[in-house]
Image 1: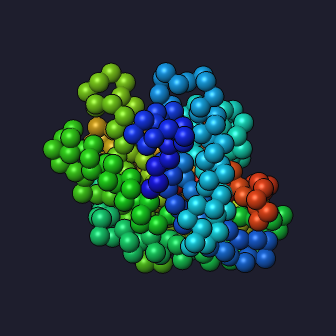
Image 2: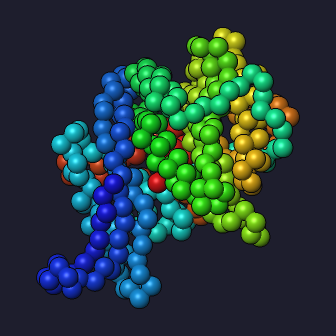
Image 3: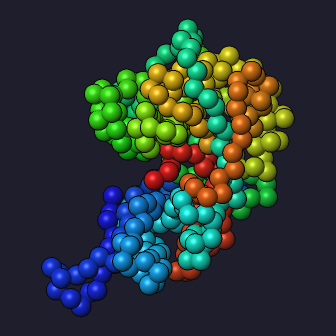
Length: 332
């Protein structure tokens, strides 16, 4: 994490007022072209943009974002090139777009209610020691998908759902649950099915208000959902629907429903008001809509609006690639 502050550089260090601030996070990412040539790149996530009340409406936040756009272009690029930066706007779609962070083509999720039910007998808990191995398996699946040629899409990009992302969310969870309940959740997710046909979800417990307050709106976020053998996943929209229609192998429907039910049970146990799953694959959507799982689709217009700025090789901005897996693990 890097902390950025906007100050008057001509003043002595101990006399510089902070006009605006934010944080950035280096995110390992992949980009691939039409032929399936995969490149490891960096995407910087921007979070916690804050301007003190007394400095608002005076242009400081705008100046700060313009400077950040320039600074991040080559920040930490000793590892590999920086492909872009992303932020998740809680003030709608327009403000950050003025400075080059355009809303992603899609910003939606599925929402489920908590349920006071036992965990499915065919699923088991994912504990923290499991996360590293599962994330490595997931990365291998994603790399294979991005290495396949695709028609009509010049560039694809994805932020890798690595263990660092998961633990960043889980450490926030640990702090909140220890303060609220004097303990932390053991289950970091749920997994079901035989190897090669497994389904797993990694999640986090997010508390915005005390569970006993009026309308707390607390959430169990499914950070990442993986279905082995789901060829409609990890693809651009133009080809994922086609893959879903053509896919023939047996799909682990029972395992998926079991994992989702475990998420609902976990939410109920920890006094969370909703379960949210960002942008699942067409196959997962189809299973859910045909099942008896209560759900609704939500288009995000005002909060957690994923917004992106993409850099070209000539110090300018690039046309937007197709973002694969705009899921909650990448949120910051």
